[in-house]
Structures are given as structure tokens and as C-alpha cells.
Length: 193
Image 1 (cartoon, rainbow, N blue to C red):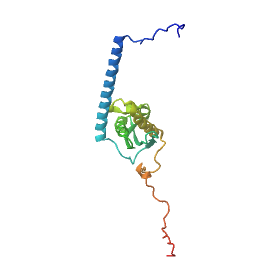
Image 2: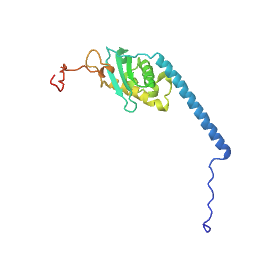
Image 3: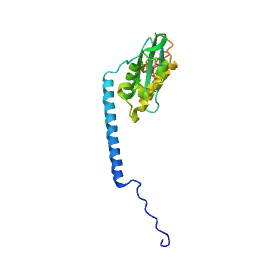
Image 4: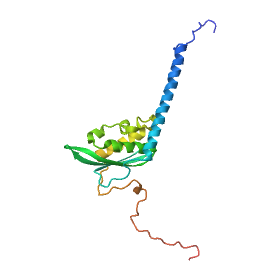
């Protein structure tokens, strides 16, 4: 409309030469994140090639089991304690995992890291601490570290402490043994046979 005063056009708050600097910083950040993720994936592959402390521990003092409804991963961790200098410390740790490779790699690193720690020290560990030599977890893999952290805390709380000498494996629950005998009765066909 002709009687309405013209409004000045809004200009970018960045001066042209600083826009280029901001763009180059963004590109450098993207390259850095790519390199960090690539290094993480290389270290995770190495950890998966020879995972440590995999399998159930028959003489465990405590067991913790957790599952993630988001990704379907499941992890069980066994802990064995001992006395050292008058303190209760973790002597051994082992795990079983069904899920993504990163969860297996982090659990493998965590079981090595836990040796010699008191329950209080172990409880204070965060997902990035538990990943050990893998380094910081990429944002899309943080849930794997959290899964290991939750399994550790579950074991430390004794929520899944074994009631018998041996503990069940995760796979054992897939094929339960029948509780009754099954009787098979042949069907009669329509002709009375």
C-alpha cells in the first residue's frame, strides 16, 4: 500500500566475512566428528574381534539383567567379590549380551575396568567411563553404555541375585521345558476310522 511506510529489510547479523568463518568452522566440526566416529568404530571392531569375559559365571555373588525396549538389546552381568585390604572389591565380572555390537564391546571393556573397584566406585561410573579404551560413545550409541551401566547397577543392587548354584542363561528362557507330559491322540477321519 502506498501510504504505508517501507520497512527496512532485515540483514543477516553476520558480516559477510564472518559467515565464511562460521561455515568453515561447521565443516571442520563435521570432519572432526566423522574422524572421532570412525576411530570409535575401529576400536569397537577390535574389541568385538576378541571380547573379554563373555559367558555366565557359575560362582557369581551377584547378577544383574536389563533390557532396552527401544532397541531390543538385553544384557546380563555377573559379579564376583573378594576382600582386599579390608574392603569388598570386584574380583571378576562377566557378561552375556543379545544386541548390537557396541553394547557387546562396551560390556567387554567394562568387565575389565571393574576389576579391583569397590561397589561404591563401580556405582559412580558413567556410560562413557565404562566404555574404557573405546573412548567417548557417539550420540547414537549412548544407549549401549547406559544398558551396561544399568546392568552393573542391577548387579550391585542384587536384584537378580542367583538363588541356586548355577544361573540360567538368557537363551535358556527361549525354550522352556514342558511342565506336563503331552499325550498325542490321533484324530478320526469323517468315515469313522
